[in-house]
Image (cartoon, rainbow, N blue to C red):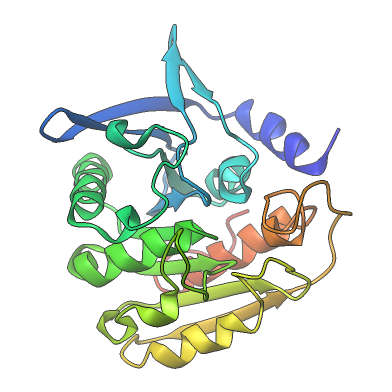
Amino acid sequence: MSEHKRFASSSQKNMEEKFVSLSTRQGVVQNFTLIEPDDADACVILFAGGPGNIHLSQDDGRVNIGRDINFLVRSRWLFAEQGLNVAVVDAPSDRQNETGMLGSFRKSDDHVTDIKFVVGYLKEERDRPVWLVGTSRGTESAAYVTIRQGQNIAGLILTSSIVVTDRNGLSLTDMDLDKIHVPTQILAHKEDECPQTPASGAELIAAGLVNAPDVAVAFFEGGDLPLSGPCDPLCAHGFLGIEREVVTEIAYFIRSHSGFSDEIG
């Protein structure tokens, strides 16, 4: 059994995952899963890469995830083990086709509106700081929403970040990074061979975060042999085999800016 599957099965024994559906725009719902460990001191919203439509559903109270191999999706239980409330967002109901949120949607008013509802729900339910965490194309969502809704966001985490603009989305270096005013961590794998997310891009993004109060860059190496193409999740691009190490580093950064113990996990 692969490492990421072992992580998921061991964590689920002690925590529950629930399905949440919010009406956000006219005729549109935003679905997400939510894991709430006891005494969590912060919330993370996880944005998957690619088209972002992970096809969430619920069957007799059980959460089903159609696409669950994305780095953040398969690692969601690891975030919960670190004492964090974890929300994994799907593409909204009007973006459930094959292209999902590819193209311009991740930097649209509609996307910001949808995630604003999720942030509001988490704050009302738990009254904890909310961090946005994106991987690959999900970094576009996390960064853009932070630019637009920074007053409601405690911090930003970017992994395998997009630094090449193409028909599928916008490079983070082409965004108004100077409008980000929250602590930001950028993580990359030195062996990431995806053309849109080279490890060297982490420093380019960091250079643009001139108004963030703290910017940290972390590089990783090693892990398991690739099981997918270079831009897919089961390789260095998705931190295959070192998921726990990466999530621990993220949680440490969040804790360092949230005033709670470093001894979790």
